[in-house]
Image 1 (cartoon, one colour):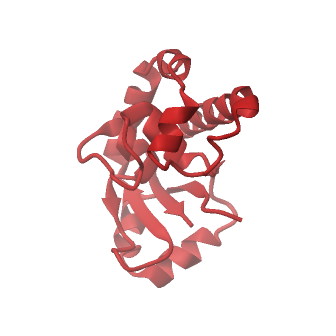
Image 2: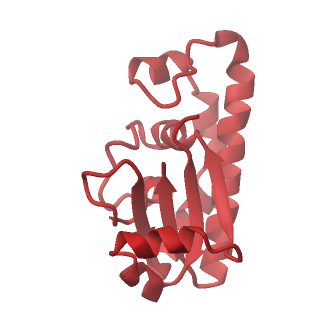
Length: 163
């Protein structure tokens, strides 16, 4: 098992409460909230769209924030990365994702660049599976884009968990 990324619907008020990690864990157990799971493709998607690993979030970059969130909740010394994005920023992210021409990025997809930059997950040496990997990245992007569009329409915030 590896590190997966989940994006969960929440509210601005709840995000404020999540500064206490116990509240975050309780929220993650909430069964009725909408969740987007992009599995292990979070770092690959961030790298494809920004040229940097998700381990190096880009401040004030809507595309980077779509993947790693607007602000860190978990702090530095924890195995699970938890961040949040407030509802007004979710709307901006949704618009940025809608405008993004994903085909331009996926057409430049190069396994060796992912390998050279130690992008997670470590699958970049499997040249024979390049088409399947590209499909996984494309599916992750489409899922994330639809999730942010829905959250923007509902004026919801997003809780990001990478664990």
